[in-house]
Image (cartoon, rainbow, N blue to C red; front, side, top):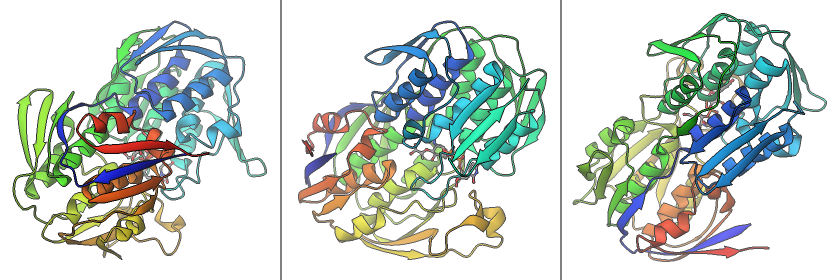
Length: 443
Ligand code: EPU
């Protein structure tokens, strides 16, 4: 349990490089279960979620060697198809091993990964789709495990009832080695999925996106090892861009991927944020005059990503006027609001009017816990002040770091391990921009 001590109000200036995408690294490590041959994965971020995924692979019997940002998956001889509860409880994506284990070994036992802090987060869409491919999956509520078996996975025409990012990936990981053709309709379009598809294709898989939301997979007999370098993390870039602007600084982001940030850059431009395209992979983010309040609604790709709304809220506290954030993907992603209020932010909840919430929202509306709100209203500008803060989830954690960097005085942030899940050595990298941020080890 570590905490950050941040002395804010200092404009961040200099260069920072975006690390590899967490939400690709985790899936490519799962994809290594699909082959007996060596996999070399490059540009892997040094983050806690990757460590946890290596733990999952290790209990299954997979050997991984890590050298800085490269992971070599060397000996892929599964001796166990059961993911223990203690590992799974800490890593939601652990359930994605269902696809490869069923396809190759005909069985898998993984705990229900739900119950994390963004709402219920069930995996019903994953499970139902795998059943359509011939898997027999029983959920035992007494121990919280899914017991999955399949003599053989076969291709199927599957239509997801709603968007699911990791659900689409789980099905890809099952279908690449299944017998025959699988068609995924209403499949998610996130660019991280296309990076996984590119890696699977290099491994010998036959996958085509035949329409934006349709993926066709022709199952193959075996896949081989490959060497793959994963894409840059677009959530990191948004975090660093906002860090530059809310501190009144001038941040040059290397390894930038503007082409993956369309909805963010549209909203950012609308809010009066300035950026300069230095070259194809370098972008400078600066503050250029008074910012203006801008409303956003989160959505699956190509919309404004749910992961960006929390850092966006800090930016909006610095704009003139009233802005709104409408979260439509997760039912509970505003844990940072109470903390921003401690810093003087003028934020209140509201319930956006929506015609058919059960259709409109990406989560299962019927299962929503009463009392959740899907919208916040922010009045600005406010000079935030220092506070003692508590982090509740990864993106909320990065958000509170941004808020503390912009607020004059010393803030204390507890629960830093949440930030470590997805950002590599964030304090060291921010310090290189002039930030005064220190990690204190807590017993
Ligand atoms: N949902 C269900 N049933 C399902 C699947 C999803 O009800 O079977 C609900 C979810 O509870 C959520 C919504 O549908 O309300 C969308 O879920 P989705 O499956 O698309 O999200 P995810 O796969 O759980 C991934 C990323 C998230 C990112 C979202 C949206 C990973 C490991 N996680 O989550 O990233 O916000 O897609 O793009 O890839 C993060 O990195 O901090 C993070 C939360």
